[in-house]
Image (cartoon, rainbow, N blue to C red; front, side, top):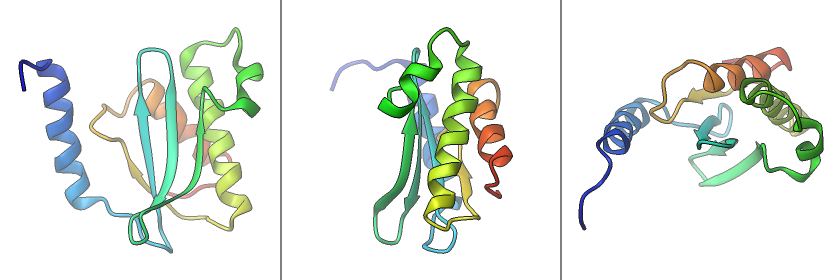
Length: 122
């Protein structure tokens, strides 16, 4: 396997530690967040069935045009708003938040704030 970035390994350890406690059910699915250098992704997952119930990202065709010219934290907030809207359309009110090993700060916090603002509870 070769050498791997120590920061990436540390995030994977944090991710595994958080996932031991955070499990999404049908009544309370898991809102999982991933961020790369340019984009942010959010999905609502039912771990019991192993299905993604709703997803949104900065690459979503319905959001892409409205995100041009915005800062990354503002983009993350809009992604959170869109994700919460999709969840509400499916009748989901309550979720459990999975920060996926990332610090709850900056873009991760902005996405969760946007989802809360649109009516998701966690």
